[in-house]
Amino acid sequence: MQVTEKTWGKLIEVDVLIMGTGAAGMGAALRAAGLGADVLMAGKGRLESSGCLGGGNDHYMCVLNTDAPFDTRQDFIEFYLKSTLGYTPGMLGEWFDALEPCLRILEEVGTEFRKNPDGSYYRSVGFGQPGAWWLHIANGQSIKRALAKKIRKAGVSVLDHFQITRLYRDGDRFSGCVGFNVLTGEVSAIRCRTGVMALGFQAVRATNNSTHNPYNVWFSPYNTGSYFVLPFDIGAAVMNVDIYNRATLLPKGWGAPGMNGINNMGGHELNALGERFMGKYDPMMENGKRRNQVAGTVQEQVEGNGPPFYMDMRHFKPEDADYLQNVLMPADKATYGDYRQARGIDFKKAPLEVEVSELSLAGFLHTDDRLETPVRGLYAACNFNTFSGSMSGGYASGRYAAETAHEAPMGQLDEADILAEKARILGPMQVGAQGAMSYDEFEEPIRQVMDYYAKFRRNMPGMELALDKLALIETYENRVRAENLHDLMRTHEAFELLQMCRLHLLACLQRRETGRGMYHLADYPALDPKLGKALVMRKVDNEVRYGWGVLPD
Ligand SMILES: Cc1cc2nc3c(=O)[nH]c(=O)nc-3n(C[C@H](O)[C@H](O)[C@H](O)COP(=O)(O)OP(=O)(O)OC[C@H]3O[C@@H](n4cnc5c(N)ncnc54)[C@H](O)[C@@H]3O)c2cc1C
Image 1 (tube, protein in one colour):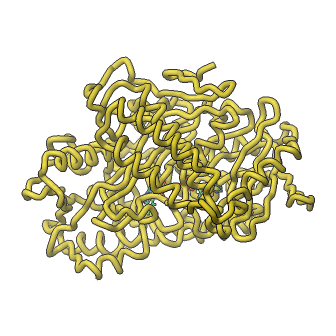
Image 2 (cartoon, helix red, strand yellow):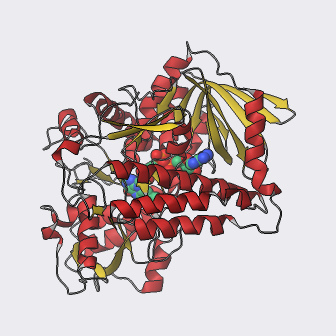
Image 3 (cartoon, helix red, strand yellow):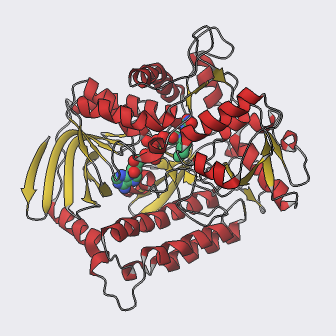
């Protein structure tokens, strides 16, 4: 890596640029560095604690290719191919092939997987999957720090606290990015031979949960859509931003779910009338698809059967209740003990009150089987979900980014573009106090619009209106004033959130059916078998184009 001081900031040159320092970025960095590449990871937080894994994870999904039921490569590929998300066997093969190496890395850095008395992995079935694919983790809170140590030792350069605000291409190739240090305000431009996009597939803060605190949410609240909005701007295509919205059940008022452990160990969901109702919505009851549990709970709520809703674990054996309460739940987030104490929660004595979470926006980037986007040299690391999917997606894309970097030219960045982006980045710091608004005065109306017109129950005219309202909010962009660098970071996150919501609504307006996403459309209440395809969106000549299952020209 080379760094040159310029009048406008730093120009950094590196072979492989990994954007994002979460689980996906880490998988990519370890693989690319293992192949001898010159690698830089850049991310808004600190490598040791950033992203969803920073708080902790309690399960790792891994198909081990044993003779246990549904435990082979084919079982894994067949399961994910059934979705309409547009995966190919090639992509899923990349995920599968990375599972085992990533498991070894996790063990090497000290991740404690629960074992059976015979020394084999303890595993459970989850989320409607056919096999017992979920390994349990006891020390989830420390994984990120342990992996970070390995990455720093491997000689990977790390640019912490760096918020990426724009990507660039040089002809049809990815050439680099510009961003700023959120602690010092210094602007840097990074040029590279290849890039790995690992900015997190779940965009949060689009809607509220019952706390109306946009930072007390399921996934990392600092992702507001960079994974989609930034590549989309340079001609990469996004897909599934209509149907891959995400929600879960949360312990009431506490923004981390733990639902995998609760469901796979046999928790019963009850409505306010004390009825166990999930049989109406999924043949596997609570341990079926996450979408069905959310949709089922929302439906019960619409019918007035709740809130409150509960997860009942009173029938558990004492040692199971104890394990869930004291090992798995805190492995996801350190504050579980405080929450439990404050609410007097004891799984053996009383059911746990839960609520439907905020609705997050998510999706994929369109890629070929080698995870390369239509912008050559730019690879997608966050197209597979779960901790395992992210780390594996990174691991696979890190390989291709490193291999391609050998032949790829160094990307060129135009100094005029860098200066223009610097002015845009710092613009909110120059807005005068008169008539100004803060980033949250700008952002809160976005959630209001999405909550009101585009949450779990919606219709086409409502979504059209939501787009108009977003356009109105956007006209206030030049009045947002950042008084300090923290405000500046939040301001750019908020601007991006607006673009992410727009992408989501534009995509949803194309899909005239109900049943593949988390939401119900009143004007198209049934599934349309003809729409069993991923919707791909791309910007060409400043116009958004759509393709069903194909990349639009
Ligand atoms: C509390 C919690 C518990 C969970 N438990 C489990 C579990 O037990 N098992 C499981 O399989 N999954 C679990 N998950 C989900 C799993 O952790 C995630 O799917 C996975 O870690 C996502 O990794 P990622 O790298 O794709 O994205 P992220 O972790 O979101 O990382 C994205 C990174 O990009 C950075 N970034 C974003 N935008 C920018 C920008 N513009 N500029 C610079 N940097 C930026 C972010 O700061 C972040 O570091 C859990 C999630 C949470 C939040």
